[in-house]
Amino acid sequence: MALKFNKATIIKNKFWILLVLSGTLAFIGMMFLYVEEPSAKHIETLKLTRQKSKNVRGEYNDPVIATQAERAVDAEKLKLKVWSAAYNAQESLLHWAKKVEEDFAFQIGKFIVQIKIDKNPPADKKAWPEDTSTLVHGLLTEYNRDFIKLTDRAGKEVRFYPMVAMDLINPEDGKKMVWDNRLSNYRGKLFAVTFQTGKYFADDLTSREASVFADTYTSQVHDILQLVDPMNIKGEGVVLLKDWLYDPEKLPNDDGKGKDLKFIRYVSEPWKINTDITKEAWMAQEDLWVQSEVYRIIRSVNDSISKFKGKGGEKRATAYKFQNDTFDLDLTLQADSSLTFKVKNRLKKRQRLDLSFRVAMSKSQSPEILKVSGLPLMPMGDKDGKDTYMQTFTPNKDLPARQGIYAVEQVLTMDSAAVKRIDHVSIGSNGADDFSHSHRTFPTNLRPFDRRGLPPPDPGVGVGVGIGIGIGGVGRGVVGGVPMNVLFFPGHGLWPNRYVGVTDQSRRIPISLVLIVDQDHVDRVMSTFNNSRLRFLETQVLLNHYTEQIQPPPLPIEVKGDGGIGVLPKFGFGGGREPPGGPGFGAGASTSEESNMELVIYGIMTLYQRYHPRPLNVERK
Image 1: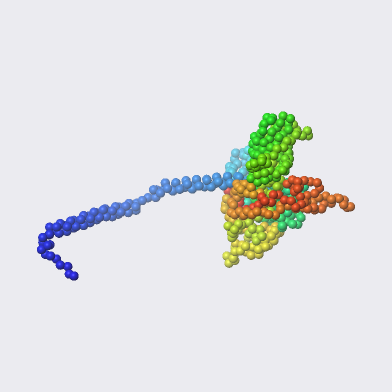
Image 2: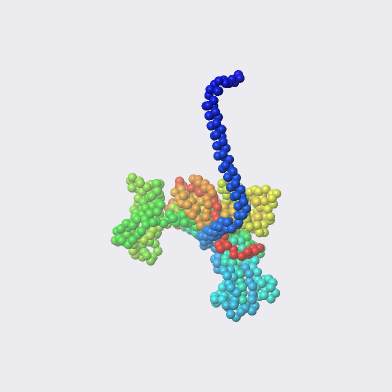
């Protein structure tokens, strides 16, 4: 429909129509002025700012650059501080055999990087060149095939050890010379010796160092095994080493069963020192360092439950209280020097009461060993009071007089220990039957510390896990693009690809353990591992009830025959000796089966490189 306008109506209301129209136009005009004026000013401002920006000079950034530089310096200081603290915590663990340290001082010795000889030294020592933290000047006083001695400007004698990659500059022609007795010809001459302190990981071994290492390497195995007080051929000790009784005269692999004994890893074959064994030696030594810490942790766990907290004294007829996680003790020294020994169960399970305690009752003499025997203690809080037992020990005339009660600790057996048996240790391995990785970290391609002497990776070859890896064996397959049969060192069974990460500060190596532990102390074991000096990082834990008996292997006993006295194996314990764990622990017996757990631990240990950083760019061949 067409729109119609009523002319008369428009004329009649023209005032109001014009008023609305003029107001609308005025509003539009005002808005145009409001927007247009600031926009023009803004454009002008931008033009001026752009013009000024062309004249901005670089000095305005100098404060920012200086601040960032200061932050970088602070970050570097913090990194070195953390590195220093981490290495210092491990330093006492990273030692070689006693003979190696005595002869070559791998930890603290000064190792030669370069020697320059001045045949005509100034008579006045003040005219000698300045020394630094890595450079010493001195007069040669002694040459030895293992070291030289210099007398420095202060008159102090300093010993320096040779390195494979060192430079000896012949003063006659300025060319390199070899380390031999010709150096003796320069006694009294001024030597400028550039050196590093200590051996850095993977530094080349001289032939003499390799020879002494090979002769003394296995001596360290006994030191590690003894850490846990292993059960021995006499039936004494605390921790059982699976399928083997400790013999101080033998090594686990001496009986030819070494491939089956995996509670300790070491190279049992003779070292082939007619070849360069540097890589093997460092890896074999590193395995011992890791296992030394593992065994120390196990000993620490067991010691923690044998120690009793409490304060004693010398008052008679006064009960002194001691406590650990297992028992409460009240010890009272009576007027007649008899000792009243009261023990109370702190666990909510029965405990066998056939225990021995070391009680210090003299300040100058060894503690007395007291054996407490009785019916098993009922769980804590037993309404009939059968969770407590009391026994009195009269004075022993053959022992020193009892002066007071000073300290007490429990004598552990395999039955009462937190860690009862060590079954398996694996270090840096991807082997099918000896795997150091957990499910959470598999598959992880392990890498060597460095690739010196190894074939270059073949990018066209796939990555896989080796099959059939054993001690001294050669696996099949490839790892990291390198055929595994070239990664084994002949005769020593060592595998260079063993690290999950290598940096200038650290080496991270995977490990796995299988232990038989008491269920009440699983948390104690894990927390002690987590506090390891080797920064143990747990990746996976498997815990299963262990239903089998923990039975020591047969003990050898002496028997008489027509041919004299011989040694035959006998199952169980014979010869009138009390078996470990107390009476009744013989053939067919075991520790408390209901509390035994198989604990499988996977993790990564971090070994820190020597601190300070290597001060010189020393080429390692």
